[in-house]
Each structure stands twice: as C-alpha cells, then as structure tokens.
Image (cartoon, rainbow, N blue to C red; front, side, top):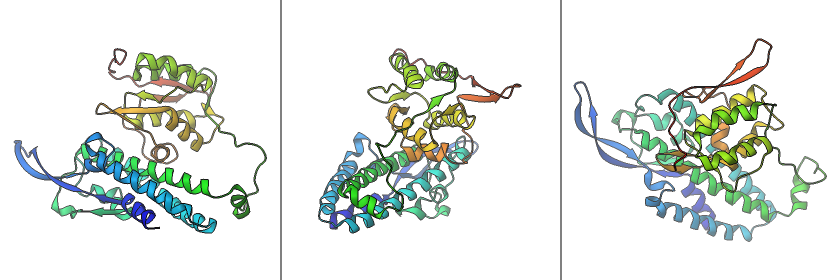
Length: 323
C-alpha cells in the first residue's frame, strides 16, 4: 500500500513557488518588484512534464498495490477516492464562483483561501493574506490545469479499483437491485430547430474543418474523432449549454449526462493551448447555482407565446477558418 499512499498524498498536495515579478502599481504607475505565486511546475504543460510523469508513475505503482487487496479492502479504497472526488468538485464550485467576482479586476491576496484550496488540500508555501503575495491571472489558470490533471489521474485510478471488483460482488454489496440489459448512455436532444440555431451561434468559435463536424454532433449525436476545439473560454461554452438545458430546449438527458457528453466531445483554447473540460469543471457551472457567465455567447429569451428562442450575444470574433 506504500505506493497508493504516496500517490494519494502527492495528488492532494499543492506546492506553491514564490517568484519575483516586476509589475506596474500605484498612481502614477511605477514599476515595482513584488512576490507572486507560481504553480506552473505542477501543470500538464511541456515545461512541467516532470510533475505529470511523477504522478503517472505513482499512479501505475498504486495499481500494483491494489492487485493484492481483497474485495472489502478495494471497496474501502473506492470510498476514499470518492471522498477525494467530492473535494475536487467543491473546489470547482468555489473556483467558478470566485471567477465571476474577479474576472475583470485583480485577484485578492487571499484568493487561495477564498477558493478553499488550503481547506480541501495540503498547500505548501502558502503565505498569510497580509503578506500580499501577488495572485496573477496566469496563476489562477495554471491552478485550474493542475487540478484537472490530478482529477484525471484520480478518475483513472478509481476505474482500476472498480475493474478489480467482480461484478457479482458489486451486486452483492449494493442496496440497489441490478437492472436487466446493458446500461444506456444518454445524450442531449435539442428541441426542433434549436440545434441549427445553436450551431449558427457556435460555428464562429470553431475552425472551418470542425464546423462541418459540429452540426452532425448536435443534430444526430455523430461523435467526432477527437474533441472539437471551442475558441473561447470554457465557461462560455458550459454556460451556453446550461441556458439551453434550463429552458428545456435540451431534453432526453440529465445534467450529469450532458456534462459527460460535453467533456467527451469538446475542448477549448486558452493562451494558445488546448484545454480539456472535465465533468466536474462543467458540473460546477451547469449543475450549480454559480453566478451567470460574465461574457455569455448566447441569450435564451421567453417569447410572447411562452416558448423560448435563442439569440447570439454579439461580440467581435476572430477568424479561425485559416487555422
């Protein structure tokens, strides 16, 4: 169990670096050297590959520890991993809630505590808020990518745990009787005319070769070979689907199904890098009461006859067709 323990500890430990930054401050503006948090070394980026490699190695060794465990022990491990997943879900709720507060202004020095990172996990090298260590937008983004990587590896380990438990043992310990037949994976179905209207709004955020795949995905659930890349913020895409779902313009699935579906078929771009959309990241927007997106791409409005219609929120879009 040594490797499993090491993996779980490392997964829940965030080691912050403190760097010197030159920033403009005051009025009139002066260039000052200040301390700023940095966690890029614990992201999936190429320059931080050592961290990802370390986590993956620990994860693989943890799987070897699991092979020798009895079913009851595996179920105990699974419950522990489930608790960890809930902590990550709580983080995303806090993260998106604070994003709405500080999107257009500087992040406060106590931001790390505001998102609950230090209460949910082990945070090394965290300074008191009155130390005024700078929180930059790049740090917030890197933190989110670090969490996504940890979540992915946690989910992978949990799949290994479940694969080691015989099906009959799962049914024997479950209080819910097994259902006959294969499980059904539900997907979003759009009310008549909505898929095309939604496509007309979305297509400008995708490269031309992906636009050809977008409409079949929305209309017929024809999956692309790889995730379609949305050239905007991830919360904008999630908010668009949320608005449609809450207006009953998307039917045939639960919010959890919708989040899984979006996660499988979409990604987004931030700072010229493709980013994933994990289900928990999406759930913190779609399945919560987090404040509305500050920069939505569409608006769902109720019409005089009681139905809802979809309208674009006009803004300048870049041309991705040449990419």
